[in-house]
Image (tube, rainbow, N blue to C red; front, side):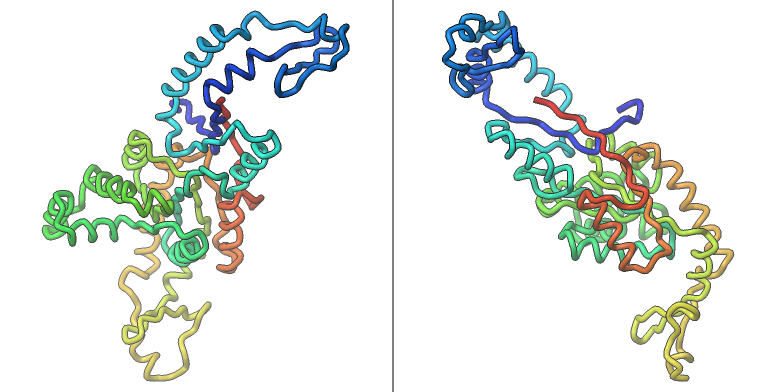
Length: 338
């Protein structure tokens, strides 16, 4: 963890202790051929010569196995806090082909019986199309979409202790402190819908402090999506944007022109922060934030070309979330325990 080496997948093979003891106590090895048999599950041939040379390993006794199993459980208890939100537990009493199938399904992003729901972070600069992609991810995968703004407003509406604290800062025009935002996000992620369906964190964490706090709380994404769009295209997208205040529709003078109806064109609004100067500031702040958080997710993220058509972007994201090859995808980093 301290070296920034984090797995993308953690597999825990689960077998009851009594079955493990039985598997080992009945194991026999043929020293001439190297073949391993089991008196119950894979009996040796009835050839007296083969049976006469079979060897029972000294550490394949019940007493020795109980010690080894005890040490294993102690080790697993020590490491699981680091991977509690990442691991999948697979029934190791199944046939080996069934176990392999469960593992393959997990590594490909499907259900493995007891797999964890998806935990997604998406980041992208202003005008990168992040909002559109969030809608498509929620529709496809059924995860809970969470933005810090929505989470803050929900806590204020509930009148919770955290909400009351946030309300004080919001009404005074001040910035809500990192610590308070982090606590609100942690509370939201702990709710049953997020635990059951998985979650999509939209634009959070924004700072290194926030990312570090999530790590310290054991909140780690299973996927991190970074929408990549050159700065000059972002500026062009924003500067040409116009909104119809009556319908709420957003147009773009070049990419999605408004209708030629003079009445519609006469009421279009150009947001004050959709100027080139304002956009350059927002883009600069975004790049600074991403540089701060990427060390926490450098081995996990996928960078998606945000200049493509929105369906193509959605296709790349879907492939990534389902474990299929996609542009700029990080290779798998697997830990297996058992």
